[in-house]
Image (tube, rainbow, N blue to C red):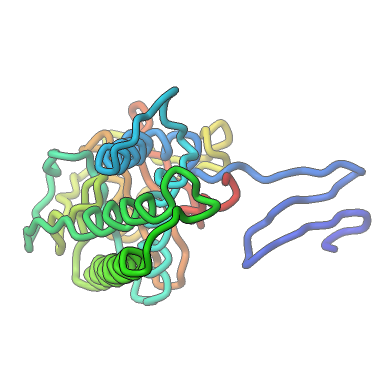
Length: 274
């Protein structure tokens, strides 16, 4: 209860619904499941599903639904990376670019190429489908040796995925940003964006996923980390930046049209859409 006649239901700080004036009101859907941010990640999440299905001999049939649990697993991994950076409490910034795209106007001090997250995530989902078949409710009938082998392999790839997520999160402690592509391949870290004298764009703080409610902010009121994220997204369209402050706040940044938009305290939370 937060006002006479009003009721708010929350879980772990997230508003699930409000009851006001006799009506049940639900919050906006997750940004990663709708709106401008989701548009950026959707093609890769669906490609993951296709690759897993191809590896296990499945056919898409009538098409792949964007709420397929394998597509959602990709979004959950993005969520885990963001939450881990937040838990480390040192702040950090992650720039995400399309596959086979090198960032512009950015100096990457430590360049690399590591596909561990994608490989482990894909491997985990392939093993899941091999264990359960096409029915996720009940596993298929395996002999004891096969079942044990699949469970052991799954544990190995889950451990590898967790370690890879931890590595990316901890690299955000290095001065500069971490850069990955949409397949979560680590491209480099210690990245520094060259800031211009005057930004040729405006920056808006958005209150809803489709940016119909927004307010222009003064760019100079933000520090180097945020300004670098704004500049990066402007110069590298399409792209997304995840900025985690030392106080734990998260901003998700992208370019929309001629300007840069961001959303505050947004987690990559797909759970409400399953």
